[in-house]
Amino acid sequence: MLSPYEFIAEKQRGNSHKPSEIHDFIQGFIEGEVHDYQMTAWMMSVFFQGMSYEETIALTKAMIQSGNRVDLSNINDPTGDKHSTGGVGDKITLILAPLLSASGMVIPTIAGRGLGFTGGTLDKLESIPGLSTALSIDEIKDLSFRNGLAFGAQTDDLVPADRRMYALRDVTSTVRSLPLITASILSKKVAEGIGSIVFDVKCGKGAFMETEPEAIELGQWLVNCAERFELKAAALITTMDEPIGRTVGNWLETEESIDVLRRKYMPPDIVELTESLGGTLLMLAGITGNIEQGINRLREAWNNGSAFDKFSQAVNAQGGDTGVFEENHGIYDQPRIVIPLTASKSGYISEIHAREVGYCGVLIGAGRKKTDDVIDPTSGFIFKKKVGDFVQQGEEILLIMGNDESQCKTVHNRLSGGVTIMKKEPAKTPLIRKVITREGNFEWLDYRNSK
Image 1 (spheres, one colour):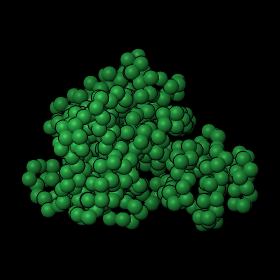
Image 2: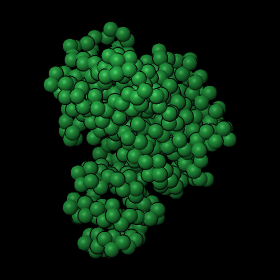
Image 3: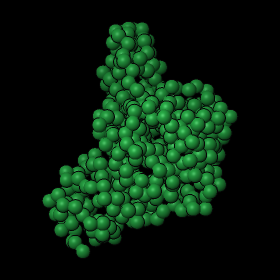
């Protein structure tokens, strides 16, 4: 057995680890024999030297074995989940999970919180008064069995190694490592006990992976390693240059999701992402024979109201007040500051910089600068216009909503530089670019039409 010093030195020299060595190191970390500074030194070595697929598989296994797993073996229906690598205004899980559940899948979602410029699914859900995502493994299993849907946070005994390792990665700038990203994501998803997964790997100005080649490489890592855990998997490479939908902010996005589930309005980007991800997952799970059949099944659950019923059932089961789904509920009607951002000239909107919007959301309380920051669920942005829309000079592009006038004015000044207006209509970038499967990489439209 290698000492922590020897183990770290091996990777610093660029050597490969044996699976047993990785297991012993992770177990030593959980038991306190490997200290935080030693784990940080090793992850920094991985950041620079990399790891093979085999090492990454071994790391994922060791992380899973650091805690318990959700046992869904008594559930007969296909199980699955969706994972996004993070974006601005990304509320797709709130819409897709109940749609999938209403379409015959069991979705035991283990979601995350926002940190940095991207939002978190748990923060959005917890803007519903009373809703708790602090579920035990047994509660996740029970809700999945009874309702076909659960929204939980990572528990103390579900992949605890990942929780501690990620906290260290976040403060030591070692997040952007393909093996560490892959092991972190997959360890939680495998521990969920699911049988299939679709990854939404985002690229662009509002994504961690800014270029398409970077996103494709991450998609390949995720899919190839997922297959080794008998997870049927595919990764969709999607564009994240402007915020998704018409809102950014925790309650604003939750409210928008409820309206979309009710079909009160259907933003094209939300619909396209939801249907493409969901249709792919239903095909992977064997519920439908191809993606188009999967999309049609989702539309049926959307149209007949069963997806909204699933969401309401899940919220109620987790203590949430579904009364806020109704108009004039009065919960979030307290006074707030609303400042419009208007067009400086007439023309076409060619850019709404998603990353800048994300950082500005943090400034007005919609996100966190550090993990213990308290989020204001009511702050955020409502977009009146999107990229490609024509605006007249002085017309409202977005509304800034917060509870601190000074912060809102600062954000107004910053966002003025994050919106670009041009004379010519901008060329459209495909929302969904490619799909990564174990068979290879494909153009999305070609793959969708071939299935």
